[in-house]
Length: 260
Ligand code: CO8
Image (cartoon, rainbow, N blue to C red; front, side):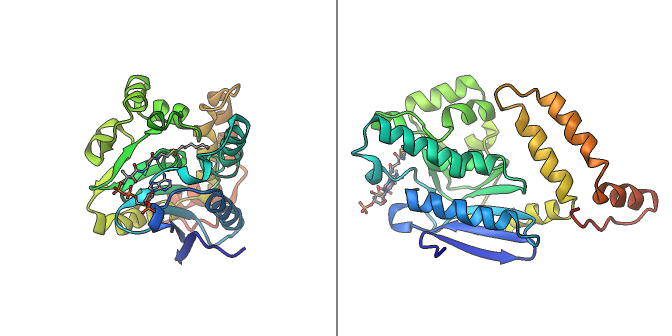
């Protein structure tokens, strides 16, 4: 597939994906969602790639939302289909991805943009970042998982207020709310995020995949997260990484994980 809306860069075991529609503040149109889906599928089976950073091009925006110009004429059925397809191809896929995905929020993360950042496993932000779910100003509600993930991350009352007022919060407030884990100057954001990602890639990728699955289980209907944790925990004992990790501990040396 030829990517027209995203850029990919690889550095050691990291893949950095940049959403690249700066003229539209990186708004997510259908084509961008499809490209991201395609690239993520490719990277999931790429043995070299151990972690992914997702960011936006330019200094102004991570992603300023779904592309309003694309759906402004839609009816109920078209709107629902767009939301369902987007959730399946991108937002749920990112949340349940077997390798860590970190969103480096480098500016506006609004509507679908904040929803994408929230689907990622965790978030870092630049000090100029502004986040919000302004859909009600368009006569909409969040359609890419925002009504579910925002209360999960910051609590129901704060999410209600953010969604109902449509107001943006700045990076410091997002940090205070637990919506992002770290805030740094914009010029340092990628380097800082890569440092965290590199720490992660030193650990067992099989164990990390299972930890993601287990943590996410609590957020899925009909799944008992504690049972899922026990299952995933037990499965770790069958992996080479587990043998290597425990052996290295006992032998007082650094583990060399193979991700198997
Ligand atoms: N969609 C399409 N184009 C956009 C978007 C967007 N979300 N955001 C910005 N742009 C475009 C502008 O139209 C403008 O283009 P042009 O130069 O051709 O007029 C260009 O980007 C630059 O934007 P501004 O001139 O507006 O820049 P400002 O610095 O003045 O303002 C803002 C920056 C505050 C970020 C402003 O652009 C803005 O408010 N953008 C819209 C934010 C928004 O409402 N986002 C939510 C969209 S709805 C959504 O995400 C729903 C998700 C669920 C969908 C489920 C499927 C239907």
